[in-house]
Amino acid sequence: MANKFRLTKFQRTNKISIAIKILFGTGDALAQLLFPKPGTSYDFERTMRNAIYGGLIFAPIVTPWYAFLGKKVRYPFKTFFGHKFSTSQGNLLNAATRMSADQLIWAPFGVPLYFASMSLMQTKSLEEAKKNIREKAWTTLINSYRVWPLFQMANFYFVKPDFRLFTVNIVSIFWNCYMSFVNYRSADKRLNSDKAA
Image (cartoon, rainbow, N blue to C red; front, side, top):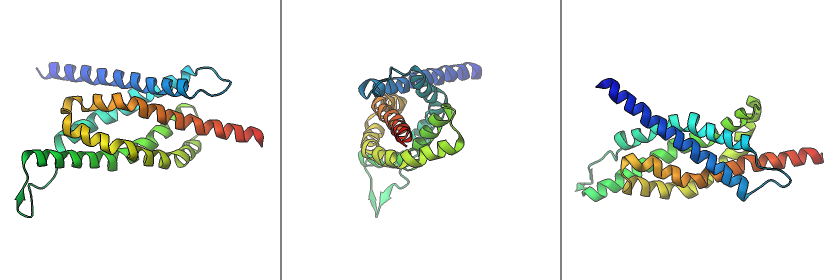
């Protein structure tokens, strides 16, 4: 029975990884189609790098992270100055606690991870990867705080735990499009300024 459970868990994790890989690739494809580089054709390698990142780096980290948030992260108090919370108040506080943990722990880790991974997959040096993070991560993180907290609050409050990661990944197609755009837009600007000098 234990082996059957492990196989089922492996199959589920594998399906999640494949879905996330497709969604990251789709985000990059949208970025290239909506914001094409002048004078260049579609870059399939770029899309593959994003898909590989989604399936092999992002998915194995974020899948257990969402399981942890759903099972272990809760608002720690049952009362507030003698006032006992109702079930709906408790659910709202739990959602706010999970959203806060996600935004304060995952977001500051996940944003630089993306830029570092993209740099290294383009066979850039570690110094270039650090530079990529310094140039892009802070602004991107600030922009993520304009998008994700409200969405995650609704996600943790209204969506059943088994569907939260799926919901995030559907919405993140547009976020992945933005991340890819930021990553490659800055590289294009740097190339143009190097050519001019």
